[in-house]
Length: 252
Ligand SMILES: Nc1ncnc2c1ncn2[C@@H]1O[C@H](COP(=O)(O)OP(=O)(O)O)[C@@H](O)[C@H]1O
Ligand SMILES: [Mg+2]
Figure (cartoon, rainbow, N blue to C red):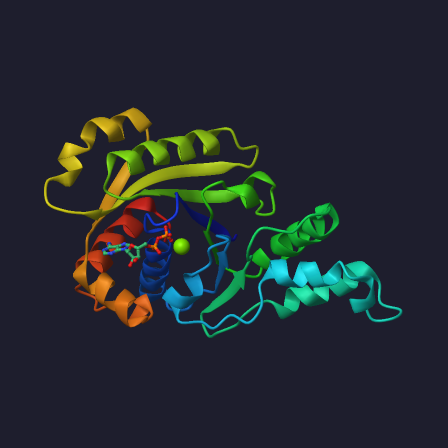
């Protein structure tokens, strides 16, 4: 059975960093698993954290399929859309990546979205894990483009405003029609004593805090150099923190 793991929270809190490091640790513990990573944030940057180059996103491809002239003569539209979706999958040894891309333009997308939903459901079944780096509004999950979530990590940075925003994301999750089995809270970029100072805010969200990821100068360094996070050393504080979170969440 495929395990669906999603990472949610507002922009800039560390979702992509957490997703990339969870993937890094998962592969380290289970080198043989097959993983599909889905970058569902319009501000896509998971590819950079993983060291992939992206040529076109699903949004770009679906936009193309709206032009009747783009469809080869005699080819049914649904077959054409599926063919385009298959083209957008970026494959590597252990992780395949799908990038959803920016918001869809004006007009009706119900039809391509229906096909995307069916495609993602079928595609997901081919993998042991599907990891989704989501956008704050959880649109793909509320539209059920992504069928079900086993574990949802809600991320906040180390600020009272960030924690309150994570609380609102949690409310959104509870209102979703899709099934989300377990929800865990992660606070990132923490400094000594900061979690204690935020304890009251954390309690108010009713989220289940599974751990924090300290502010790691090595993450900043990799980011400045534009390097993939897979290059971080095993003993770096962020890698160790994510490792313990992964084990506690029973994702593996
Ligand atoms: N634990 C950490 N230590 C240091 N910097 C971090 C940490 N987590 C995230 N960052 C930095 O914060 C910024 C936003 O992180 P990112 O993962 O891109 O957030 P999001 O995907 O939520 O927008 C990036 O510059 C990233 O390098
Ligand atoms: Mg991101």
